[in-house]
Image (cartoon, rainbow, N blue to C red; front, side):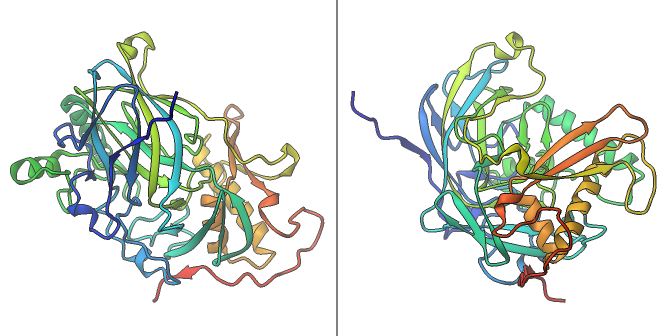
Length: 411
């Protein structure tokens, strides 16, 4: 039997502003018009812009990170009308391949300014920074992070089906409640934002409605997945998504060449534009049959492998950098594991921002050590030693090397 050419279900134009392309959108809403159709079981290629819509350049300045317009992100390709999909079904997404565009063989990792996006460690590292990565087949390296090279575990950061009107209303209700009741002195969620809404081909009153009601794409949510940034959703993986509207209205985007567990700098993967090849299969009545309340996934067989004895592992506990004791706080613990790694690699000549960027996108392993030994949660961060071209083993004093600098923002 001869091979059948794989259809491209949606193309993008990298030279055209993302908000002028009808096959893209940047809000979750059930009324965003369909951008195309995909038959059940069909294998298709879907082109994606990078999540910022091309706001970040291949240069040696982080001014673009500092001044990024976060009302425009994420630009997703879709939504697609999947043949036969109805509410209560499950959409099975099998990823066959993900590749950067041949004409754009590079990606970026960034740290946002604390006053415009922030990140996991923004109270310690408040300034914008950036690293550009060049792709060399399955490998990547950066002029901004010398002596590091590793294979990418390439994957989409975002997969999801549109919410129903009822689910969208619930998202907006509970996130508005969090915003109104929080005692934290920081932004804890983003409500619907009409500014720079892009709803595909929608215009006029419909576009205005999506802007007023549409959920931001920043967080993943239990009812549909969305922006979960799971690095193992790579080639050969299967994701099982609940369907809430007729046709599923499936969208995909935010492609990553590589990412560390946690994507800690927020813009922390190696972000790229590219093409994803996947198949979409409908499992009738799957939500009921699987008793599904949130998406499931089976990881693919492809992953960079380092021996179990080749991960230098850092521990973190629920005691923050100021010495304050927290109760079973895994976020505080993972932050502390990250800081221990930054301190360790600083000894070789890297700046803190360089290490912060690297830990966001290199294939680090973040694991839960313990969640039962009060008052401290224990988290671990495993750093693969073989991504460096010099020995980082803990054997004594470190020799400083010329590590250059990452891209930084002007004052």
